[in-house]
Length: 281
Image 1: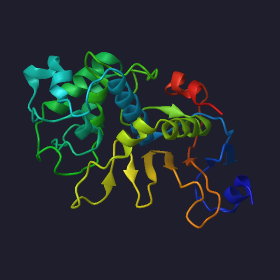
Image 2: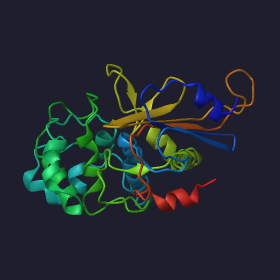
Image 3: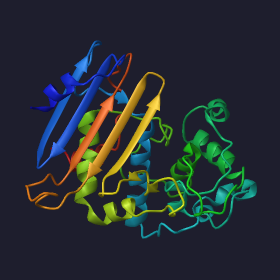
């Protein structure tokens, strides 16, 4: 049974359109089911899957510039020092790992008046860091969109992957299933980057195991989902042994994505174009 047949057998209730993809053993499949105009290459809002790209862009940029992930955030954002109320020991990997312990008071309502663009991101980071800490950094996991905002600011911004600076770093990007599969393939091909991303940053007392941008499953899989009004998205990546779990040839990589939308948009800003070109096909 192929991917399209599997998709057609699923019940997605009121979803007017679904796109899904799988990449395994150098074979890529993309399928779509729609009641609205949609193709497998359509750009859809990916909600919190944006965090994956924020993390990849920042971790890769820091690595290429020999900046340790344990560097304190305030060291990279000195312009925010006058309004800084967060713990000065807070590190980059702690904010990307959702273990910052920051007080979670900055939401979409607080950010909306700031508008878009680099200045808005800088002011958003100022708000996030000005609220202080509720927990000691590294001791408490909590899913907070504000954690990813500081990663897009300051003098050492992650421009290497072509990340669009005007988009919200926690959930503001559009993409297609083929692009998401390409990013998963590229991540699996870069062992050093993969090791940095998937190393757990949580404690045994936390409700799940979390790396940088991804939740981590018990068998080595990495997964994340996101939701916005009218949209749902999910992505998963895993790397299996050469002969799988039962002695059968196994996929080195498997990535999937589903999208739900009441309307589609072509020409939405796609993500990380140099990175996508490097790992296409």
